[in-house]
Image (cartoon, rainbow, N blue to C red; front, top):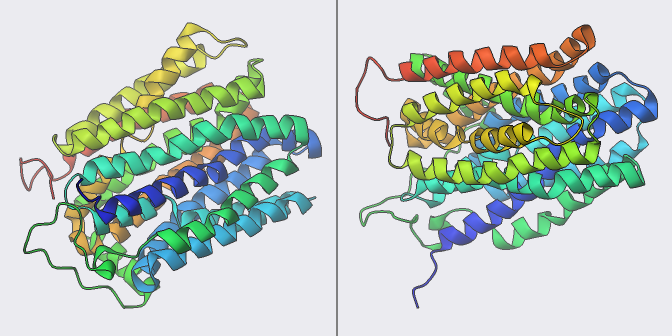
Length: 418
Protein backbone atom coordinates (compact mmCIF):
# COMPACT_ATOMS: atom_id res chain seq x y z
CA UNK A 1 0.00 0.00 0.00
CA UNK A 2 1.45 3.39 -1.01
CA UNK A 3 2.40 5.67 1.85
CA UNK A 4 0.33 8.84 2.17
CA UNK A 5 2.45 11.91 1.57
CA UNK A 6 2.68 14.10 4.74
CA UNK A 7 1.45 17.08 2.71
CA UNK A 8 -2.02 15.57 2.83
CA UNK A 9 -1.97 15.50 6.64
CA UNK A 10 -1.12 19.22 6.71
CA UNK A 11 -3.90 19.73 4.18
CA UNK A 12 -6.41 17.85 6.37
CA UNK A 13 -5.65 19.82 9.54
CA UNK A 14 -5.83 23.09 7.62
CA UNK A 15 -9.17 22.13 6.06
CA UNK A 16 -10.72 21.34 9.46
CA UNK A 17 -9.42 24.59 10.96
CA UNK A 18 -10.69 26.73 8.10
CA UNK A 19 -14.06 24.94 8.09
CA UNK A 20 -14.49 25.63 11.80
CA UNK A 21 -13.35 29.23 11.41
CA UNK A 22 -16.29 29.81 9.06
CA UNK A 23 -18.43 29.94 12.19
CA UNK A 24 -16.64 33.10 13.26
CA UNK A 25 -17.28 34.64 9.85
CA UNK A 26 -20.92 33.47 9.76
CA UNK A 27 -21.95 34.76 13.16
CA UNK A 28 -22.25 38.50 12.34
CA UNK A 29 -24.91 38.01 9.68
CA UNK A 30 -26.86 35.80 12.08
CA UNK A 31 -26.67 38.40 14.87
CA UNK A 32 -27.98 41.48 13.01
CA UNK A 33 -31.70 40.86 13.67
CA UNK A 34 -31.29 39.43 17.24
CA UNK A 35 -29.10 42.38 18.33
CA UNK A 36 -31.54 44.81 16.73
CA UNK A 37 -34.38 43.24 18.71
CA UNK A 38 -32.43 42.96 21.98
CA UNK A 39 -30.93 46.45 22.14
CA UNK A 40 -32.91 48.48 19.63
CA UNK A 41 -29.74 49.34 17.73
CA UNK A 42 -30.08 50.28 14.07
CA UNK A 43 -28.79 48.00 11.35
CA UNK A 44 -26.21 50.57 10.35
CA UNK A 45 -24.84 50.58 13.92
CA UNK A 46 -24.52 46.80 13.99
CA UNK A 47 -23.17 46.78 10.45
CA UNK A 48 -20.45 49.24 11.54
CA UNK A 49 -19.05 46.55 13.86
CA UNK A 50 -19.19 44.01 11.04
CA UNK A 51 -17.49 46.52 8.76
CA UNK A 52 -14.63 46.97 11.26
CA UNK A 53 -14.34 43.19 11.60
CA UNK A 54 -14.20 42.73 7.84
CA UNK A 55 -11.67 45.54 7.38
CA UNK A 56 -9.28 44.28 10.07
CA UNK A 57 -9.81 40.72 8.85
CA UNK A 58 -8.20 41.86 5.60
CA UNK A 59 -5.60 44.36 6.84
CA UNK A 60 -4.19 41.81 9.30
CA UNK A 61 -3.65 39.23 6.56
CA UNK A 62 -0.38 40.48 4.99
CA UNK A 63 1.24 40.97 8.41
CA UNK A 64 0.00 37.55 9.52
CA UNK A 65 1.54 36.02 6.40
CA UNK A 66 4.87 37.65 7.23
CA UNK A 67 4.57 36.58 10.88
CA UNK A 68 4.02 32.99 9.74
CA UNK A 69 7.31 33.16 7.87
CA UNK A 70 9.08 34.67 10.88
CA UNK A 71 7.55 32.87 13.87
CA UNK A 72 6.03 29.70 12.29
CA UNK A 73 2.53 28.98 11.08
CA UNK A 74 1.59 27.00 14.18
CA UNK A 75 2.32 29.81 16.64
CA UNK A 76 0.44 32.41 14.61
CA UNK A 77 -2.63 30.22 14.06
CA UNK A 78 -2.79 29.09 17.69
CA UNK A 79 -2.53 32.70 18.86
CA UNK A 80 -5.24 33.71 16.40
CA UNK A 81 -7.61 30.97 17.58
CA UNK A 82 -7.06 31.97 21.20
CA UNK A 83 -7.74 35.63 20.38
CA UNK A 84 -10.98 34.74 18.57
CA UNK A 85 -12.06 32.50 21.44
CA UNK A 86 -11.53 35.16 24.11
CA UNK A 87 -13.11 37.90 21.98
CA UNK A 88 -16.19 35.83 21.12
CA UNK A 89 -16.88 34.69 24.67
CA UNK A 90 -16.45 38.25 25.96
CA UNK A 91 -19.29 39.46 23.71
CA UNK A 92 -21.84 38.04 26.16
CA UNK A 93 -21.08 41.03 28.42
CA UNK A 94 -21.72 43.79 25.86
CA UNK A 95 -24.25 46.54 26.63
CA UNK A 96 -23.17 49.34 24.27
CA UNK A 97 -22.50 49.52 20.52
CA UNK A 98 -18.83 50.34 21.11
CA UNK A 99 -18.48 47.10 23.08
CA UNK A 100 -19.61 45.21 19.99
CA UNK A 101 -17.27 47.22 17.78
CA UNK A 102 -14.31 46.58 20.09
CA UNK A 103 -14.85 42.86 20.65
CA UNK A 104 -16.46 41.58 17.46
CA UNK A 105 -15.03 44.32 15.30
CA UNK A 106 -11.43 44.71 16.51
CA UNK A 107 -10.51 41.62 18.56
CA UNK A 108 -12.29 38.95 16.51
CA UNK A 109 -11.42 40.78 13.27
CA UNK A 110 -7.69 40.67 14.02
CA UNK A 111 -7.90 37.07 15.18
CA UNK A 112 -9.72 35.77 12.12
CA UNK A 113 -7.54 37.84 9.81
CA UNK A 114 -4.48 36.04 11.16
CA UNK A 115 -5.80 32.79 9.71
CA UNK A 116 -8.24 32.81 6.82
CA UNK A 117 -7.02 32.44 3.27
CA UNK A 118 -3.41 33.45 3.96
CA UNK A 119 -3.25 30.29 6.06
CA UNK A 120 -4.55 28.25 3.14
CA UNK A 121 -2.16 29.95 0.70
CA UNK A 122 0.78 29.37 3.03
CA UNK A 123 0.08 25.66 3.43
CA UNK A 124 -0.47 25.22 -0.31
CA UNK A 125 2.75 27.06 -1.18
CA UNK A 126 4.85 25.18 1.39
CA UNK A 127 3.55 21.66 0.97
CA UNK A 128 2.51 21.34 -2.68
CA UNK A 129 4.19 21.69 -6.05
CA UNK A 130 1.77 19.50 -8.02
CA UNK A 131 -2.00 19.99 -7.76
CA UNK A 132 -1.55 23.38 -6.10
CA UNK A 133 -4.60 24.90 -7.79
CA UNK A 134 -6.80 21.99 -6.71
CA UNK A 135 -5.52 22.16 -3.13
CA UNK A 136 -6.15 25.90 -2.93
CA UNK A 137 -9.63 25.35 -4.32
CA UNK A 138 -10.48 22.73 -1.70
CA UNK A 139 -9.02 24.77 1.18
CA UNK A 140 -10.96 27.81 -0.01
CA UNK A 141 -14.09 25.67 -0.10
CA UNK A 142 -13.46 24.69 3.53
CA UNK A 143 -15.00 27.99 4.59
CA UNK A 144 -18.11 27.18 2.60
CA UNK A 145 -18.26 23.77 4.27
CA UNK A 146 -18.14 25.44 7.67
CA UNK A 147 -20.74 27.95 6.56
CA UNK A 148 -23.05 25.06 5.66
CA UNK A 149 -22.62 23.60 9.13
CA UNK A 150 -22.67 26.75 11.24
CA UNK A 151 -25.19 29.13 9.67
CA UNK A 152 -28.43 27.19 10.34
CA UNK A 153 -27.25 26.02 13.76
CA UNK A 154 -26.11 29.48 14.89
CA UNK A 155 -29.37 31.01 13.65
CA UNK A 156 -31.36 28.38 15.57
CA UNK A 157 -29.27 29.03 18.69
CA UNK A 158 -29.87 32.77 18.45
CA UNK A 159 -33.64 32.31 18.14
CA UNK A 160 -34.16 29.64 20.81
CA UNK A 161 -31.35 30.37 23.28
CA UNK A 162 -30.60 34.04 22.75
CA UNK A 163 -27.84 35.86 20.91
CA UNK A 164 -25.31 35.24 23.72
CA UNK A 165 -25.29 31.53 22.91
CA UNK A 166 -23.76 32.36 19.52
CA UNK A 167 -20.75 34.11 21.09
CA UNK A 168 -20.22 31.26 23.55
CA UNK A 169 -20.44 28.58 20.86
CA UNK A 170 -18.03 30.34 18.51
CA UNK A 171 -15.57 31.06 21.34
CA UNK A 172 -15.49 27.51 22.67
CA UNK A 173 -15.19 26.05 19.17
CA UNK A 174 -12.23 28.31 18.48
CA UNK A 175 -10.39 27.38 21.68
CA UNK A 176 -10.97 23.67 21.06
CA UNK A 177 -8.93 23.88 17.84
CA UNK A 178 -5.73 25.06 19.54
CA UNK A 179 -4.65 21.55 20.66
CA UNK A 180 -5.38 20.20 17.16
CA UNK A 181 -2.94 22.67 15.60
CA UNK A 182 -0.31 22.06 18.27
CA UNK A 183 -0.37 18.30 17.97
CA UNK A 184 -0.93 17.62 14.28
CA UNK A 185 0.20 20.54 12.09
CA UNK A 186 3.84 20.26 11.05
CA UNK A 187 5.61 23.44 10.08
CA UNK A 188 7.00 22.49 6.65
CA UNK A 189 8.10 19.46 4.61
CA UNK A 190 11.79 20.07 5.39
CA UNK A 191 11.02 20.14 9.14
CA UNK A 192 10.25 16.42 8.90
CA UNK A 193 12.85 15.57 6.25
CA UNK A 194 10.42 15.51 3.33
CA UNK A 195 9.86 17.43 0.09
CA UNK A 196 6.60 19.05 -1.05
CA UNK A 197 4.10 16.89 -2.85
CA UNK A 198 5.07 16.66 -6.52
CA UNK A 199 8.51 18.25 -6.02
CA UNK A 200 11.17 17.35 -8.65
CA UNK A 201 14.26 15.41 -7.65
CA UNK A 202 16.44 18.54 -7.62
CA UNK A 203 14.04 20.56 -5.45
CA UNK A 204 15.62 22.70 -2.73
CA UNK A 205 13.81 24.51 0.07
CA UNK A 206 13.54 28.32 -0.22
CA UNK A 207 15.41 30.36 2.34
CA UNK A 208 13.19 31.10 5.34
CA UNK A 209 12.52 34.80 5.91
CA UNK A 210 13.99 36.02 9.21
CA UNK A 211 13.48 39.75 8.73
CA UNK A 212 11.12 41.93 10.70
CA UNK A 213 7.59 40.75 9.86
CA UNK A 214 6.04 44.21 9.56
CA UNK A 215 8.95 45.43 7.41
CA UNK A 216 8.70 42.35 5.20
CA UNK A 217 4.97 42.92 4.67
CA UNK A 218 5.48 46.59 3.82
CA UNK A 219 8.41 45.80 1.51
CA UNK A 220 6.25 43.32 -0.37
CA UNK A 221 3.57 45.99 -0.77
CA UNK A 222 6.09 48.56 -1.97
CA UNK A 223 7.59 46.21 -4.54
CA UNK A 224 4.24 44.92 -5.69
CA UNK A 225 2.72 48.39 -6.02
CA UNK A 226 5.32 49.27 -8.65
CA UNK A 227 3.73 46.82 -11.04
CA UNK A 228 0.50 47.50 -12.91
CA UNK A 229 -0.62 43.87 -12.69
CA UNK A 230 -0.60 44.06 -8.90
CA UNK A 231 -3.21 46.83 -9.04
CA UNK A 232 -5.34 44.98 -11.60
CA UNK A 233 -5.45 41.93 -9.35
CA UNK A 234 -6.02 44.04 -6.24
CA UNK A 235 -8.90 46.06 -7.72
CA UNK A 236 -10.64 42.97 -9.05
CA UNK A 237 -10.35 41.21 -5.70
CA UNK A 238 -11.68 44.30 -3.91
CA UNK A 239 -14.82 43.93 -6.02
CA UNK A 240 -14.90 40.23 -5.15
CA UNK A 241 -15.02 40.99 -1.41
CA UNK A 242 -17.57 43.75 -1.90
CA UNK A 243 -19.94 41.50 -3.83
CA UNK A 244 -19.64 38.37 -1.66
CA UNK A 245 -18.81 38.47 2.06
CA UNK A 246 -19.50 42.19 2.43
CA UNK A 247 -22.84 42.33 0.63
CA UNK A 248 -24.48 38.92 0.25
CA UNK A 249 -22.67 37.26 3.15
CA UNK A 250 -23.63 40.06 5.56
CA UNK A 251 -26.99 41.25 4.26
CA UNK A 252 -28.69 38.30 2.57
CA UNK A 253 -30.43 37.26 5.80
CA UNK A 254 -31.67 40.81 6.67
CA UNK A 255 -32.71 41.39 3.03
CA UNK A 256 -34.70 38.15 3.03
CA UNK A 257 -36.19 39.07 6.40
CA UNK A 258 -37.37 42.38 4.88
CA UNK A 259 -39.38 40.34 2.39
CA UNK A 260 -41.02 38.27 5.12
CA UNK A 261 -38.76 35.21 5.04
CA UNK A 262 -37.88 33.66 8.42
CA UNK A 263 -34.32 34.05 9.68
CA UNK A 264 -33.70 30.29 9.88
CA UNK A 265 -34.92 29.79 6.29
CA UNK A 266 -32.72 32.66 5.06
CA UNK A 267 -29.73 31.32 7.01
CA UNK A 268 -30.33 27.87 5.51
CA UNK A 269 -30.38 29.37 2.01
CA UNK A 270 -27.14 31.22 2.71
CA UNK A 271 -25.67 27.96 3.96
CA UNK A 272 -26.91 26.29 0.77
CA UNK A 273 -24.79 28.77 -1.16
CA UNK A 274 -21.93 27.17 0.72
CA UNK A 275 -22.83 23.73 -0.66
CA UNK A 276 -22.49 24.88 -4.24
CA UNK A 277 -19.54 27.05 -3.27
CA UNK A 278 -17.67 23.86 -2.35
CA UNK A 279 -18.36 22.36 -5.77
CA UNK A 280 -17.58 25.57 -7.65
CA UNK A 281 -14.36 26.35 -5.82
CA UNK A 282 -12.91 22.84 -6.07
CA UNK A 283 -13.75 22.77 -9.77
CA UNK A 284 -12.19 26.22 -10.13
CA UNK A 285 -9.00 24.89 -8.56
CA UNK A 286 -9.02 22.03 -11.03
CA UNK A 287 -9.53 24.44 -13.95
CA UNK A 288 -6.81 26.78 -12.67
CA UNK A 289 -4.24 24.03 -13.21
CA UNK A 290 -5.34 23.79 -16.86
CA UNK A 291 -6.75 27.12 -18.11
CA UNK A 292 -5.44 30.68 -18.17
CA UNK A 293 -6.59 32.06 -14.78
CA UNK A 294 -7.37 35.45 -16.35
CA UNK A 295 -10.02 33.89 -18.56
CA UNK A 296 -11.54 32.08 -15.59
CA UNK A 297 -11.76 35.32 -13.61
CA UNK A 298 -13.44 37.08 -16.52
CA UNK A 299 -16.28 34.55 -16.59
CA UNK A 300 -16.60 34.47 -12.79
CA UNK A 301 -16.99 38.23 -12.40
CA UNK A 302 -19.18 38.67 -15.46
CA UNK A 303 -21.65 35.97 -14.42
CA UNK A 304 -21.66 37.17 -10.81
CA UNK A 305 -22.56 40.68 -11.96
CA UNK A 306 -25.52 39.38 -13.97
CA UNK A 307 -26.79 37.34 -11.01
CA UNK A 308 -26.70 40.37 -8.68
CA UNK A 309 -28.88 42.35 -11.08
CA UNK A 310 -31.51 39.62 -10.72
CA UNK A 311 -31.40 39.24 -6.93
CA UNK A 312 -33.78 42.10 -5.92
CA UNK A 313 -36.56 40.63 -8.06
CA UNK A 314 -36.32 37.06 -6.71
CA UNK A 315 -36.48 37.60 -2.94
CA UNK A 316 -39.89 36.49 -1.65
CA UNK A 317 -41.46 35.70 1.71
CA UNK A 318 -41.60 32.04 0.75
CA UNK A 319 -39.17 29.87 -1.16
CA UNK A 320 -39.52 30.14 -4.95
CA UNK A 321 -37.78 28.26 -7.74
CA UNK A 322 -36.12 31.47 -8.96
CA UNK A 323 -34.55 31.98 -5.52
CA UNK A 324 -33.10 28.46 -5.62
CA UNK A 325 -31.71 29.10 -9.09
CA UNK A 326 -29.90 32.17 -7.75
CA UNK A 327 -28.58 30.20 -4.76
CA UNK A 328 -27.16 27.48 -7.00
CA UNK A 329 -25.73 29.86 -9.58
CA UNK A 330 -24.28 32.33 -7.09
CA UNK A 331 -22.95 29.56 -4.87
CA UNK A 332 -20.95 28.01 -7.71
CA UNK A 333 -19.34 31.42 -8.30
CA UNK A 334 -18.93 32.60 -4.67
CA UNK A 335 -15.18 32.15 -4.06
CA UNK A 336 -14.22 30.44 -7.31
CA UNK A 337 -12.10 33.56 -7.88
CA UNK A 338 -9.60 32.57 -5.17
CA UNK A 339 -7.54 29.79 -6.86
CA UNK A 340 -6.82 31.76 -10.07
CA UNK A 341 -6.12 34.91 -8.03
CA UNK A 342 -3.54 33.14 -5.83
CA UNK A 343 -1.85 31.65 -8.90
CA UNK A 344 -1.65 35.08 -10.51
CA UNK A 345 -0.16 36.54 -7.31
CA UNK A 346 2.79 34.17 -7.63
CA UNK A 347 3.78 35.97 -10.84
CA UNK A 348 4.05 39.38 -9.16
CA UNK A 349 7.15 39.00 -6.98
CA UNK A 350 7.92 35.31 -7.29
CA UNK A 351 7.11 32.34 -5.04
CA UNK A 352 9.24 33.51 -2.11
CA UNK A 353 6.85 36.41 -1.46
CA UNK A 354 3.69 35.01 -2.99
CA UNK A 355 1.86 34.52 0.31
CA UNK A 356 2.62 38.03 1.58
CA UNK A 357 1.60 39.55 -1.77
CA UNK A 358 -1.63 37.58 -1.64
CA UNK A 359 -2.09 38.91 1.90
CA UNK A 360 -2.24 42.46 0.52
CA UNK A 361 -4.54 41.44 -2.30
CA UNK A 362 -6.75 39.73 0.25
CA UNK A 363 -6.67 42.93 2.34
CA UNK A 364 -8.21 44.71 -0.64
CA UNK A 365 -10.85 41.96 -0.77
CA UNK A 366 -11.80 42.71 2.81
CA UNK A 367 -11.71 46.49 2.30
CA UNK A 368 -14.33 45.92 -0.37
CA UNK A 369 -16.27 43.72 2.03
CA UNK A 370 -16.04 46.35 4.76
CA UNK A 371 -17.36 49.05 2.43
CA UNK A 372 -20.27 46.86 1.36
CA UNK A 373 -21.13 45.74 4.90
CA UNK A 374 -21.62 49.33 6.04
CA UNK A 375 -22.60 50.90 2.71
CA UNK A 376 -25.41 48.44 2.02
CA UNK A 377 -26.85 49.08 5.49
CA UNK A 378 -26.79 52.84 4.89
CA UNK A 379 -28.43 52.42 1.48
CA UNK A 380 -31.10 50.23 3.03
CA UNK A 381 -31.84 52.93 5.64
CA UNK A 382 -32.05 55.60 2.92
CA UNK A 383 -34.11 53.69 0.32
CA UNK A 384 -35.91 51.13 2.49
CA UNK A 385 -34.44 48.11 0.68
CA UNK A 386 -31.18 46.64 -0.61
CA UNK A 387 -31.91 46.88 -4.35
CA UNK A 388 -29.55 49.81 -5.02
CA UNK A 389 -26.72 48.03 -3.20
CA UNK A 390 -27.21 44.90 -5.32
CA UNK A 391 -27.27 46.91 -8.56
CA UNK A 392 -24.09 48.82 -7.68
CA UNK A 393 -22.28 45.57 -6.87
CA UNK A 394 -23.46 44.07 -10.17
CA UNK A 395 -22.03 47.00 -12.15
CA UNK A 396 -18.69 46.75 -10.32
CA UNK A 397 -18.48 43.02 -11.07
CA UNK A 398 -18.91 43.71 -14.78
CA UNK A 399 -16.10 46.26 -14.51
CA UNK A 400 -13.88 43.70 -12.76
CA UNK A 401 -14.47 41.22 -15.60
CA UNK A 402 -12.82 43.73 -17.93
CA UNK A 403 -9.95 44.55 -15.56
CA UNK A 404 -8.77 40.95 -15.16
CA UNK A 405 -8.28 40.61 -18.92
CA UNK A 406 -5.67 43.39 -18.72
CA UNK A 407 -3.39 41.40 -16.38
CA UNK A 408 -0.09 40.70 -18.16
CA UNK A 409 -1.62 41.83 -21.43
CA UNK A 410 1.39 43.76 -22.72
CA UNK A 411 3.98 41.38 -21.37
CA UNK A 412 2.87 38.07 -22.74
CA UNK A 413 0.05 36.34 -24.52
CA UNK A 414 0.77 33.03 -22.77
CA UNK A 415 -1.35 31.84 -19.86
CA UNK A 416 -0.19 33.29 -16.54
CA UNK A 417 1.35 30.23 -14.92
CA UNK A 418 3.85 29.43 -12.25
